[in-house]
Image (tube, rainbow, N blue to C red):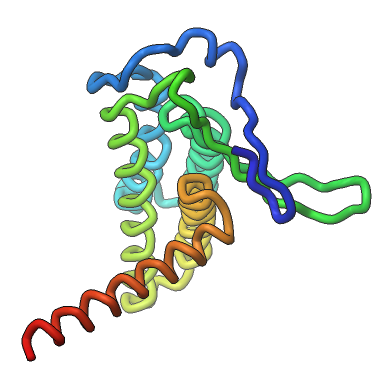
Length: 201
């Protein structure tokens, strides 16, 4: 599904992948190399951040290393592992009029390649846990007055948060679906509370 600001249509992610996939969901890791690199850059960036002062006395060298790892992670997750591991991808497209459109694409349909449960679990856990860790680092940097590290931590939160936001939008199907999901959720909660109060009376 191609979801932009104005249009929705079904598209295939990559035709070569579609030909090979008429199998049911598997529980094993179908893309071990993609799974490895999905976690590698982000975990190494966290380790370098934690051990930076022990590894090197140069703040600039550590900062550049962490930002390079985060950039490699952003590119890898956005362009490769999301497509392979969960069948999702997103990007920004500028039309002929110069207007910017965000495009969120997901593989769907029963005849197309299915996503492995293990791949999906690895993808979403890595995508959610690492930005949370960087947010914790941001608070610890702020409260410990290590302000020189704040730009690095903010860069990590922005890059990993952008991927998280993009893939959540792909997963739920765009802006209108996010609004509908929130409205439906709050509506169901209100209905449950109303019904439980009526049953109590």
